[in-house]
Picture (spheres, rainbow, N blue to C red):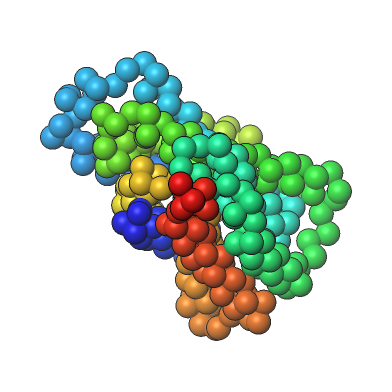
Length: 316
């Protein structure tokens, strides 16, 4: 179990890098960043798969292709695009408030899976995590600048954020359950297949975005952008957050019940906050510091509950 927890924490630390790259590449749109990252992810995955590609493809059944397609869309491309639209239309604070509910949503929807701890026992650590999420978002609301967007845009943005929440929650559950039902795939193999599928899906999306820009349907890209840095950062992000991070997450998904892996996603939030403090060269504000402490406390508490036997088991 300890190995699974460590893999989940490290995956969250690598995923936190995703929030820094847009700061490093402010001249590129969310669609361009998503296509760049997942195209690089697909290329790296193909390179890793190449020696045993034929043998691995022979393991795939039609249902596996469908699973890879739906997970590539829900866990990567559609999730990120809905998140980006939510931030653009409703603002960072309301969107982060909704997305911050992913661990709770995964825990609640996975409560009937094998190995899950009853929600009654998880009530206290979930309450601590809820207070932590509230602290993060109260702080965000306090320091967010008023955008002055019309009500219709805000409502649409909130709907997009809810869609992003639903996408990633569904992906987390589907990925964990599919790996446990299909032991013929190792975590590394499924991560490589998932990366290749994401890259293949990203290519037509990128081609469509390029065509729309040239046709004048969308706003043309700003000239003079640094494409070398674009591919360098997205390549590093694809290798660290996607290839290595997803493989670590697959290991955690095999070893842990979804009620626990859902809460380990919180380490992505903690890591992103820490990276942001380093990038801005400033320490956390009071509510941010309290949130970090509460997040670590809540997840650690949950880990101990999962590791200890239930009262019924002890009595038996």
